[in-house]
Amino acid sequence: MKLNIGCGFRKMDGYVNVDAFPDCNPDILHDLEKTPWPFEADSITEIVATHVLEHLGADKNVFFNIIKEIYRVLADGGIFKVAVPHYMHQNYYSDPTHVRTFTKRTFEMLDMDKNRQWMKTGSNVTMLAAMLKVDFELLSVTQTYDDLWTKKLIDGEVTRAELREIAKKQWNVVTEVGFTLKARKP
Image (cartoon, rainbow, N blue to C red; front, top):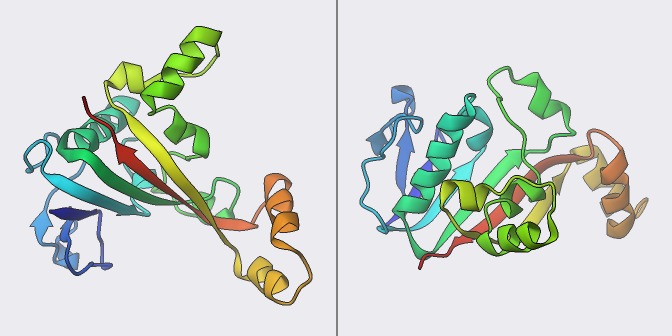
């Protein structure tokens, strides 16, 4: 079984579409902040969360419970695909329902191997994998550029390498960041 959590009006064929908003007519009406979710442990092969996580868990403990629930329901090797607004884009700040930002480091904190490395070196990083008893391997990170910058890239005004460097320093370059993670279970 595959889940599209917080589906809103973006339903996906082949997925169980889950949302708390009845007007979008999800397959399963459920508030994702209420745990446990109505799925068996290790029963899900893929979870897609497109522009959802930034809305959930204003209280960090609620957010932590959501992460633990995602881990609980994913099978070993299950894939978790996340898309969120980039923290340096006005789209994130213009929506008053957004409660948290995400970076690559956020998801690295959910990797037990990284946590162990950081513990050995005394790094000043929150060991979320160890704290929450979860283990996700970060497989990939993608960026979606703002239309203005996409046009500049297509028109040859900037190279992809230059654009990546610009995006590190300038606001409103990257609109969305995508992360693909894999659940690792003992």
